[in-house]
Image (cartoon, rainbow, N blue to C red):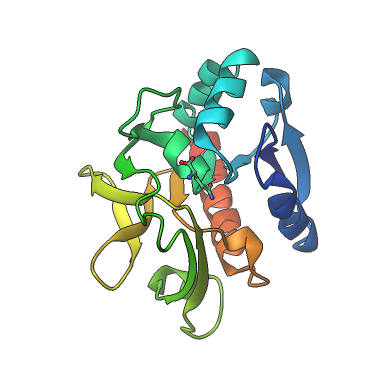
Length: 202
Ligand code: GLN
């Protein structure tokens, strides 16, 4: 299995480190040809407008859409989640394939960054116990609406959505790569395996 990490801008190195710690082969993706042969892709946090502009410059928008459309597992964290969304509320370049709307910088100036314990029952599929996940939010987006095919995986107490999945696409408003808890990456790797089975048998 080879997992790509989009390495145009943002905290891609942290994702690469977690994946390597889990013994996974990783490739940094900067050009369309780097997508060939990958089994899954992570789009990191950073600045979604910058990631989008660089993706346009390097001719990556259509190849990334194809990668998603052919059933490969893709996970966007924070800016990566915005980049995957159909609607970001701004006219900015997006992959735009996941049926969610997001509100960028939804936590305002007072609480730009914070940590909170999040319950995510799905993580029990990859680890013992049901300890909450320490979620780190940095100028994070909120998922403000989801289409019918989207499963909500985690919400803040007030019912605000911060993790969701639609088939082969996973998004989180927060940054699991900045914690020492690899459960989220394990969860994504399990998703990659399931998507590999689905794409080879279809
Ligand atoms: N605020 C950034 C954006 O709108 C996302 C922040 C992050 O990825 N930590 O793109």
